[in-house]
Image (tube, rainbow, N blue to C red; front, side, top):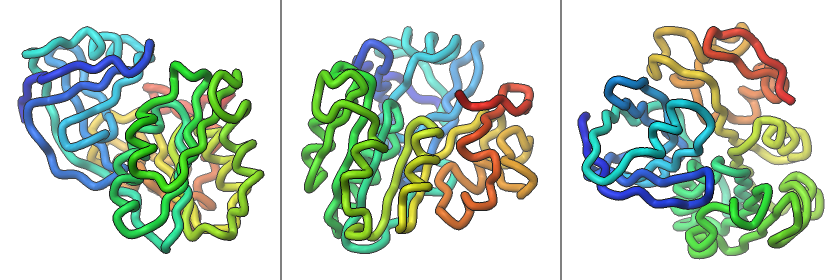
Length: 250
């Protein structure tokens, strides 16, 4: 599908939201492949039916940040698995731009469940979509590495202070090391949104396969549950580069 850029919103010094002129139905946690003519195609989680949050991390996303109203963009999707509601009390944990796929899940889950959200970033200026999370969360806990807003420390440090048994489900997206720690600390079911280097987006090329399980992040993920993660040995330890080689997470 060819669309036009309707608006570009600067969320922080490194994140912009691209608003397109068409709405696409999706489920929280799913993604689309965004194509820049003459440049490349990459996967991005839906922020809303017509919105994608783009963090500037490389040449492609740098070009995405240069888009302006009226520019052409290709979109195909939605693809992948999604966050599935479970129980009456949900704990959502988002780190950095991982806030993007978590926000629509919080919006959806809040219709039938009580949602507590832990939102983390390096500093106050990098906390994303705070007003939206406040609107849809029963409780919002802000965390910053430098203490410039809310709790000083990582989201996983704050997590230790909560009575996790009082929740029915944890959903999380952010740095993989953070999500791995969440999984280790949690006594209840967890759903995580994983990120891997993708090419086709539909499970054909095998670029985003994890371990030897035959699971592809684009087809079987990006959202995986606790049971699946037990068998993904590279989760929280390795990522893969554009050639499919394992690279140890810092």
